[in-house]
Each structure stands twice: as structure tokens, then as C-alpha cells.
Image (cartoon, rainbow, N blue to C red; front, top):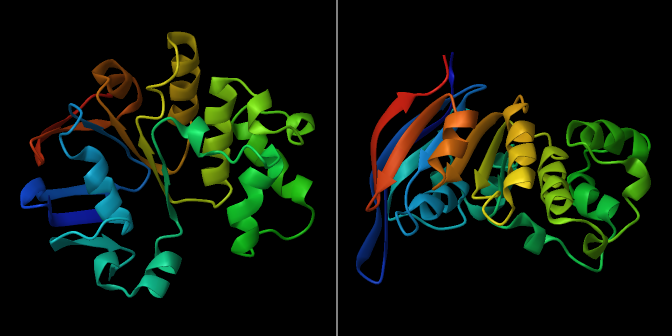
Length: 225
């Protein structure tokens, strides 16, 4: 396999405190990578650095032969489009004023990715996350917590990501809903980074798990045969 992403020597500090220290890892194409660690270990900050949502003190993020961290903001936004992130408690990121279909398709429309009818573009995405097209004129408040998580995943998938980063997206769900979302993520063909403090969830979904503690990434090991 070839690397889909190579993260090298990321350092990030806030107020003189080091949050991420010399973090390096590679993600292979099609790999499902778990990153485990307690709250405050630096996992989310590292992912924000990868996406350019936080500016690291030093390091590089190589994607398609480019160092994303060396790009100016305009070029960075375009270059990182194939890398999408779903944040913790995804239901809270949905605009309650918008219909579900508009939430899912907003990014794809902005980036001129839709040709033909919206429903033709939307239908296979909904099928992949087990949502019904006849429900897409509802607003977020009319959906359950698990359905909201699926809408957030569908919104990311609508941008046809090559890499999907999920940050504790099952932490706010009960056990039955969590299982369904994990099964959905496990079926995704994109390269996947799943951040969680839930080791059992990572063991289920990950090809490999890296542990993070005190801002440092420790040894990884394979979980799937």
C-alpha cells in the first residue's frame, strides 16, 4: 500500500504549554487507523493541526505530494477538501434552521460537485448511511441522536473524501446507537482516522491503533487480522 497521508514531527503549544510533541505517523490508503488516549492527551489538537484548523509550531503534513502546512490559506482550503473531519457530538454541528438535504449537500454545492439532480447525487449517499430520502425535508430537531450522527457523516461523504477523520463521534450516543455508527464507519472505503478514548470501539473498527499520552504518540499495533 501507499501512504494516503504522512504526518511528520508536529509540535503545538498554547500559552507556553506543549499540547502535541513531535507527533509523526502515516496513514495507508484504505486503512482504518485508531488514535486512542485520555481527554487532554492532544488527539483533537493534532487533527486540527493536520487540517490547518490550528497552526502547529513546526512539522509537516504530506498529502498528494504537498506539504499542506506550507500552503497559503486559499490553496490550503482547496487542497484539504478530500480530507474531511466529523467533530465530537456531531448532532450539535447541524444547523437547526436547515433541512437535512441542504445540510448534507451544502459543501458539495459550494464546491460545484453536483451534476444532474440533487436527488440523484443524494440517493447513494443516503443509502450508504441508512437514511431515507423521503426524510430529507425534515430539520435536525426531528431526528434521533443516531440519525443526526448519520446526517453528519453523510455531509462529509457528500464531499467524496479520500480521508475521513472522526473525533469521538459516538461518545454522546447510547450503546445500541454506538454500535450502528461503528458498523457504518467500518464499511466506509475511504481511509479513516478514528479518535476515541473507547478502546473497545477502536479494537472493533481499526486496522491499527496508535496511543497518545501527554501530547506524544506511542507505539502502534495491529488489531485486525
